[in-house]
Length: 159
Image 1: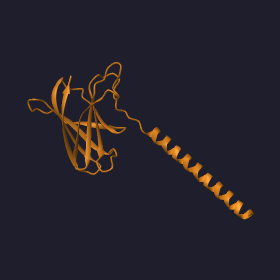
Image 2 (image 1 turned 135 degrees about the horizontal axis):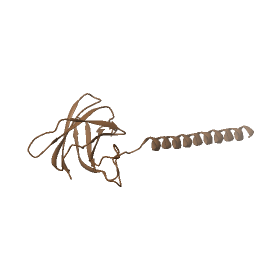
Image 3 (image 1 turned 180 degrees about the vertical axis):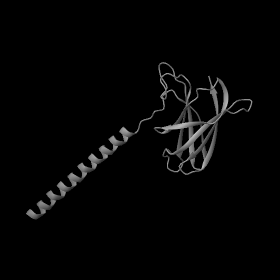
Image 4 (image 1 turned 90 degrees about the vertical axis):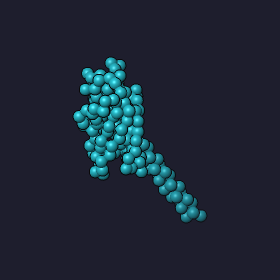
């Protein structure tokens, strides 16, 4: 009888420790994730489009800074800011490595020079500081970590 009680007590203790350890590790993992996930996309940014090519989804946003909500790139510039997020279609995980650039095409078919987007915290970003107000086609070219070239085109209105 004593042996049976001892076995039950040991089993209960070992189960309790395992459950407590599991809860502690789950809580620690949740804290770690919440600390590392920081979305730099301003709340007032507007999605201008998304497109998929060769297993990559590109989502484009435009943000127009104001004195109340400054640019995440430059606190002194009120030029629109372009944000592009590349995601693997298969895993839905953000792509952080590679290069991306943009060109703007006006209604006359004239394109600007390519300007590089810089990677920062989940997005490829550029300030549209040399652009006049108007309607454009936004051309995004990328060569990401898999070395494949991709093109994405979105309509864009600059005010």
